[in-house]
Length: 271
Image 1: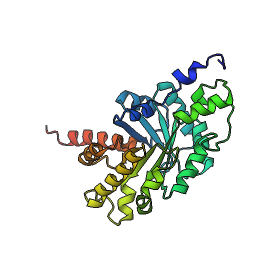
Image 2 (image 1 turned 60 degrees about the vertical axis):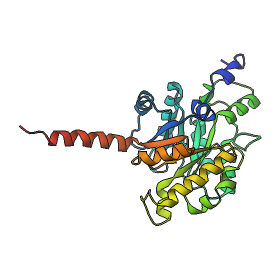
Image 3 (image 1 turned 120 degrees about the vertical axis):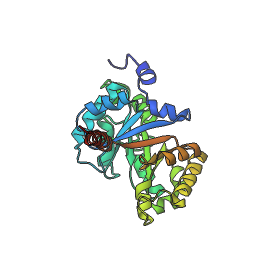
């Protein structure tokens, strides 16, 4: 189809996770680091996750593999995001062109760095992402450039990670950047920078979430909880404080935990 079906941009091109966040609902996500096949999309969908993200920062996935998973996610109706290994246009624009519904930018420390991410992820007038004649998000249909660009800007999410003390100190000016949708707190890297890796009960952790949530609420942005899959008590605490996006863990972690539990159950059997 082509421009003869303009309702596609309004009725079918949607980011359901972005819509749920706009309603102030809690959304769940998982990380993909291990499974290289499109089967992980159906697993995430069947499990009931609202989204998932491919963690290219911490896995060996190629851009081709990442794109294939994102394409499958489009067909399954579950938003797929990509945490890029570097916040450069070479990664950001290519994962979006490959079918991702948003980008997760790690280690953002300043408002200028956040603006550079938005610039790479958004088309004019919000950014300077290079024009692409056809996109998988548009089902490779042809639309007027301005219509397509506006629609893609509307549904594409830009998520920046707050995982450094410097970013925490500048959290309000970062989330104030136009085009940023969410700040995902990287709890593991943040505690590591404090010299207390994994010590989630340190009062600085709760204070960091409180500060981030207050800043995001002030500017109409959302907060994500990351790195706390082993601490559901803290996840619940920070959700009650106002966080709405919960990163629950990795495909590797889920598989290993289930396998370990089964092996331990058999080991305890007695004849």
